[in-house]
Length: 458
Image 1 (spheres, rainbow, N blue to C red):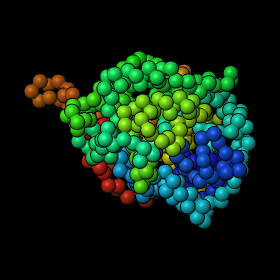
Image 2: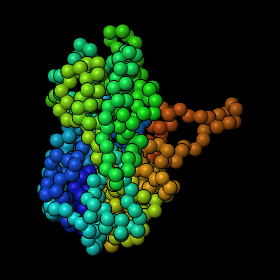
Image 3: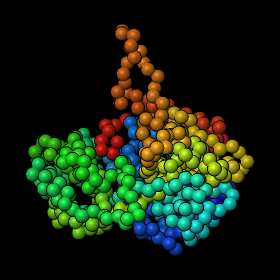
Image 4: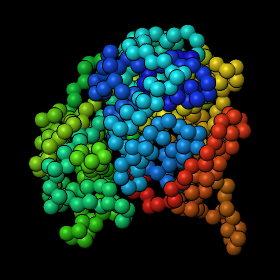
């Protein structure tokens, strides 16, 4: 079988298929042809955040992580091995993470790596995981194959700051609601926030070519686009001060900018929720208005790039097979997902199902109670009108049966902290049972992080 793309989805697909004994030819155009966002030819390079989402029983991504761990998912395994302190989030040292995935792919005896651009989908069983920056030639062939126009939206990465340029007399380390102190917090007074917001309003953004249409995904909205929705929108979103007591005042600030550790040594920190497409000079001026970052050295500026994806409900089955050609499967952002973890998970399923096709077996869909099953069912059945890529969330899986209050005889409403751990265990058990009994896979129950307070990473 063939896999096109060596990102998170393609790497996971290739390794999942190879574990089932199927030979894989993996095509990756980098480093022969680079993209506007990538810096290297390594597999699974992270170009936006370094976080794979919140962990634990309260988190939808925590359930998806656990599902992948139970079947030996390569991406979450590499993430666990290169993990950085990030409170309630699974954040990684990005170069170490990518190096681990690259080694796993290149050293596998059943995987042949072919470098260079693929301009057309080849014959046979193929997983198309060419990612959000699919080349124009391949995207056109995928559009021909699916009979559907490709869609585009814009994604943005956040600036990364050198730690030694952060004024720690102003900023302080803490997690929300007394979680571990894995974040650096820069507090704003009202006047400082208004000055920052005014500069953000005036800053110059990326100007698209005439043929480009700016369609931002809600889950990765640039800070300047958030600001356009109203003066208080940033401080009720990524700049929320909730749960952060300033040690100088003992109170929540008016607003807060948070930074998350980027590398294992803690020399680089990225601004959380500050994805941006601002021009670099303006970007630096805006960042320097954040208290504690007046002299900040930006070691990597935020960038904006085009993401390409399919209108999944029109073209995909819940097995991730194309309706137009069941020997072709799609994974990752191209399949209509958003997020590193979601890309890896759909890569795992597409690779597993492609291998099953190669072995003469029927492709499968995980159970609806599982987060992966909920996601792929959504992709196949969502309203195609105005379809946008989807992150995992609890609304993708069935609600729990109503509990009846013995005194009133009426349904008892459960809070998030009550019901989500139950939904977590239900989903994980359903997934492991399915993986072992129906998919015939070896399953290892993963360690589960207990429910914690939901913070910004939730």
